[in-house]
Image (cartoon, rainbow, N blue to C red; front, side, top):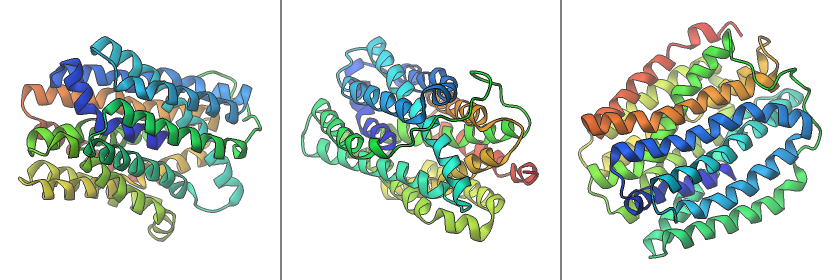
Length: 359
């Protein structure tokens, strides 16, 4: 559900940018609100799950997503768009934390590698959301009506799934939020970079194709569709890949592949080559974050109800800082230069297995 909702926003970005009259730098500032909403709400997710149960938290977050998504297409200016993005980001962030707390428990109880499969459904939602909105916009539907169609899908999923969500309360962590430390800090830093890369695909992918590769705005969401499809396919087989390679090799290989994808995206002069770059980034990033959340459940430096929100908060800081930084770099030089900066950051993630092996 949050994957579908977030991806439904991606094809709308060029229309929201034009409706609000924003340039690249001002769009980057407004996009800060998406990550800021998640960043402010995530520290509360763990304690809310402990006190109210994950099911209630996920229900509230789902309702807020459905209420805010159509408003993203209607916001008349920068302030209104920023306010709606703040609420939308908060809903997605809380949902993300609550889901991962449940996923860690289920994976541990099963004794099997499951996290990539769980995250694959986020990617399924991302592919479906980006594909559906791009198709509806290509057929001439207005952005607002396309978002209403997305909300109808979300409400249907909510009605089908909510009864199966876990009702028990998580074990209290003893605090509302704790700063990550030790190995948790390293995991969070790696998630920061990978979320930054994913945020670049979400918030700037359509803008890049429309602006740098002269793709029609109605079809510019195709880049995120390719990214989501590649990520989905790799996550569906990710548990077997991680079991075969080991967690550390999966992180190393994925980081290098995603870095190569950004290089292809930035330097390929034709749209088809850019789409190949989107695919490589999706393949490379696909199993890094699932491995990191599995490691969060295995580490003993912090309780999981504190570690997972802390890692998620630090990771989503990449979504907070990433779009704005990319906007500033693009405004000062070019969008291509901004993407090359992300490629360099992914090389740093490739070095983390040297320390993560200690878990």
